[in-house]
Image (cartoon, chains in turn purple, brown):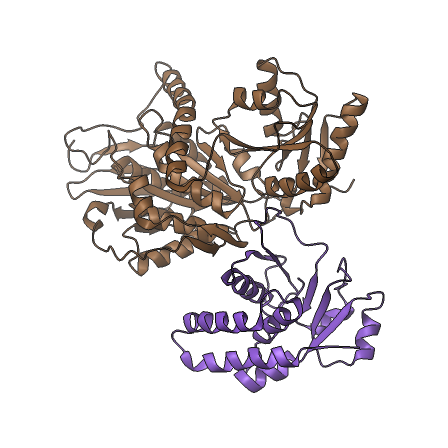
Length: 184
Length: 443
């Protein structure tokens, strides 16, 4: 799963956690490059019903998540992406632009405005929470109900010292589940 | 022994014994002193949290969790990528009282190993963690630890040794100390890194062994990858690892002794011979401990793991995370009817030469994968050990060396498949052509 530097590692760990909690075998790992804040990074997830032994990067993903749409023009984000899968992009760009920039890719394209959702529900730009919900919805890696039940537990644990942000995070997930859309 | 008498000394270290039971380390420019009064700290805080069995942890978290459950008397460490998180997590266990370990935040890895040596010699159980150049800086003390027969346990998160500077995984750090007299266990994933650490003290501290031990895992590839893991309950680990009861130690006032004095022509050879014997003895102990571990967890460990090797015609020998990728590739090849197998080395030191040779004896071609280049024009270190083991045991199977994955170069299942294709070609033609090969490098 491909993402960018805005907490991509955290996003991959969140997804791994959520899948783990529904009984799956998981891997979540970032590809470390230059050690500086904001550098584009890729983080990966494998999710399976069986133990995972392979330890390499992912070259033929089922799903690609792009957290920063400025990377669409500089990184070949659909490289190796299976056409039975999908790409999920955090963007406000229109369908025409996206189809053009992803020329040659014939699979499904989903978009979500994670900035808007994050600003409305959390008051700050944390794209990870809405992106997590979007990928769960699109990949159907677990049911929405299981996902939301699990996440409230995780947030209660994670934000034990600031419970006031739990509601906002849950709202961000719920909004994202509704708002992620496939472009035609 | 009189008060303040130097009891051991070399170029960098002086250890002094006082009535108040302190050990002093004089290391290069700085002087550090730390009470090794761990016994007094013991039983202070026992707020153990019962672990659930099914967890998801990174390799570093797994190593830190094992250390937490072992609850050693002393941990001395200096941070270095990618092992930094281990002492980082561990120091939080210290500060929130989950363990009652004396945590020594030293100023270099040389001092980290020196502190472990001082603590272990005093009679404490000591652990550390490092990577790459951190291990390089320890190098002098690595040999001293093993020659003083101090069963220190280290978590080594494998990373390329500079230069040029590279923070990513290969095995050049571990290979650099392969002849230093440390037991070396390699781990495919977080689970094995954890399990090997739980078994480590029982092996190292056995009176027929008394050698330091390092548990290796791949930097970033497993150290920073969150994966499923089965943890053992705290109480079970405590019971399994047991109390450290050294037979000879500096803080035993009934047996005053010197550790590490001058050892010239008359004795050093015999002492080295004893180290070599201890390494041989370790083989038996490693298997005994593994048997007990299996009784506790159901997880079986030996010198190595054989994966679909029994009926295999071609096989790869390798260590750490690449073994997992190889298993994945074997499953794909088996679907096509290709009889591929794997021998994954867990115990690299002592090297189980005879056992490895026998396990490989029915193959038609073998590739040994080394994640460190010995730069010797004669193949990698693991390759040399495997072929020499086969030769000595009169087993002759065409075997080739592949150096791969240097500096974190990703090893894909396609790369592994290529090795098996090469082996099939050797079987078909009978020609090895070049035995010293590279995998995944640009020419």
